[in-house]
Image (cartoon, rainbow, N blue to C red; front, side, top):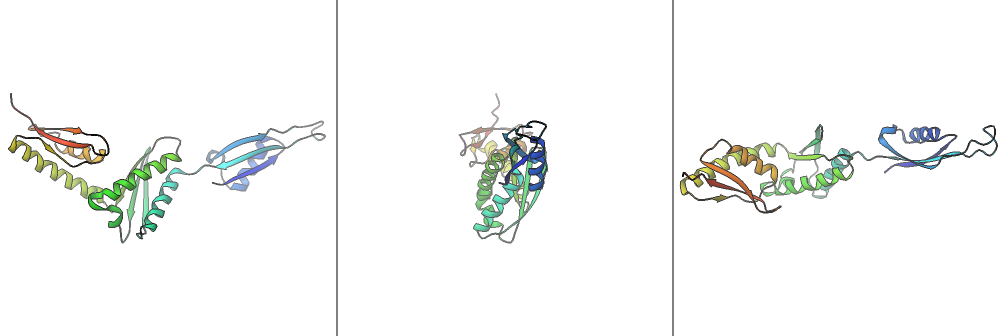
Length: 208
């Protein structure tokens, strides 16, 4: 975190001096006035300079990106990251030769990294940001897999007349299952359990 303490005849001049030293703009900083100063007689005798401390705000997206880069390096799987932001939604797309290490079995490592990245980005952000972490379009492939799984298990529920419980999934994956079966009038889907063990149950619609 970069910060400087600067002086000037007025608070405004002290702030301008600090911004020049930091090579940044006021909207990217936090200003703390240590002493408002004193003009003195005729603006000379007994004058006292204004003192301010100006701190550069950490960019939340850059902090999250650096976090991911550091974790990947420590795992021996260096990556490149493309960042896309749409309002409060931030999408990090990772690529690399050993990207499979960051995905893990059924995306478990990727999901854990996404959770941690969400914590990091909101630690530095003034507003709540939602993170989506992807690795070489794994999410798209996973969504296709989940959609096929949902349809297959829905058929099983209808055929056996019994509820079918899926494995625990993060909320956005559960949403894929719900969406995939939304128009299937033969079954209904509900979420059960408590995070991180919350899962979907597919139930056959029993005719009355």
